[in-house]
Length: 151
Image (cartoon, rainbow, N blue to C red):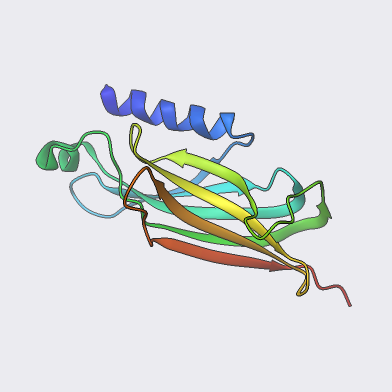
């Protein structure tokens, strides 16, 4: 039951970030119940762009064996594509970009974040998936781009 409550908490965090991730795939990777989850996330401020995130979710047996109940690995992968006519809303154009999605990977210490950065010179949206930790920052990241080039 604690795992189900924890997953419900993840859904709540995703919803409070202003958008909802939709699980579109779940791949079993071993007999311990570990899975790779694939979610679709529409950019809330850029109509016509959808990102697909893949991340690792530990199973009950793995959690029991390792004694770490409330944490999943920070590893993730992202791919973003144009899925309709692109309409850019009021987005942050600074080099820091803005967060478009966040999901907890542990109770308080770690989260998976997706930031959007606008490369105005090259007319490209950059989506960066990265782990955010309270201390000992992580170098685990993935990047995807959506060109805005129009002939």
